[in-house]
Image (cartoon, rainbow, N blue to C red; front, side, top):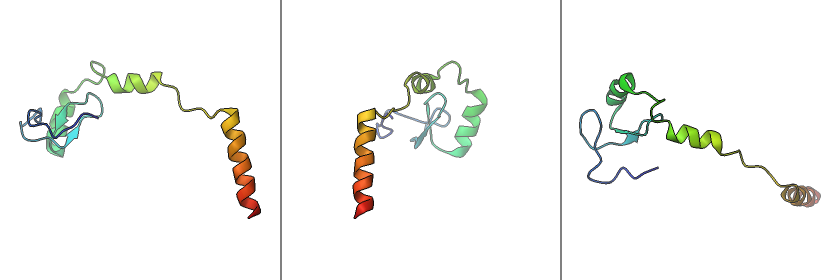
Length: 80
């Protein structure tokens, strides 16, 4: 996530210092009130960059070798 500490970043509604980002379009906002106002105007289809990235990146898969090592470690710990 991009840093919200930069002095040039402002809330898209009230222009105050933001604390959060919209989960759909990633624009900064400072409060629940501002988020609700922004949400009425937000179109997640126009800028769903993060969602597209998450959908295209496959979930982490465990390699058979890692699985075998983990099984051996678990068996060893169970014997203790």
